[in-house]
Length: 206
Image (cartoon, rainbow, N blue to C red; front, side, top):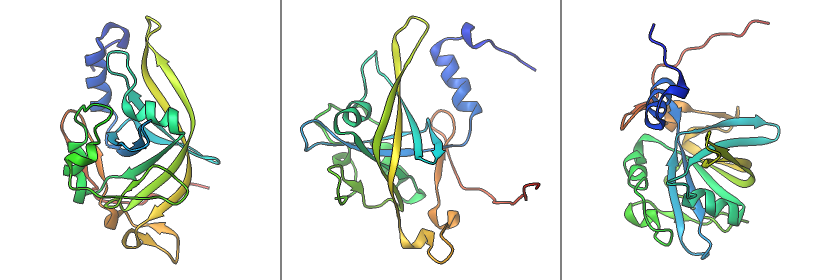
């Protein structure tokens, strides 16, 4: 077994080992509204998961660029809201286009063929192509610091307001999400992604 101490590694090496080890990772495709009240920011994040079911809270870690907050964290802090889309195979290519770094007043959506639609009771629109959208309000942003006491990441805690399910991915009789119909995409390391594989069941012991 090969062992590395994380403290001996560079940020790049730690990132490489973390993203290669913790796989597959779900993707939060997030829309936020800029301070100008017009520009819609869209960006994907794979440092994303469930924190709590009561209350319903998820986490998204947004890495800073040269110490500066990215649009998603800055906008969420300002508007106190965000929409989280689960990425399906059908639009993963368009999602990838939004990973480019653009000026804050330029919408990544304009670089794609994706459509936006309004969300009742919210200023931030959602992406029409998504089969699952979690509308959310900002619960908290936790700054993550390195050993030099510099903020390197913003950990967003978002409280879910609504679960918006497309009919084709939701069993309305039993209230189950149908993963085979959802066709979710997950991140691996580097530029690699993966699709949903074989599903198997293991009963929990009493």
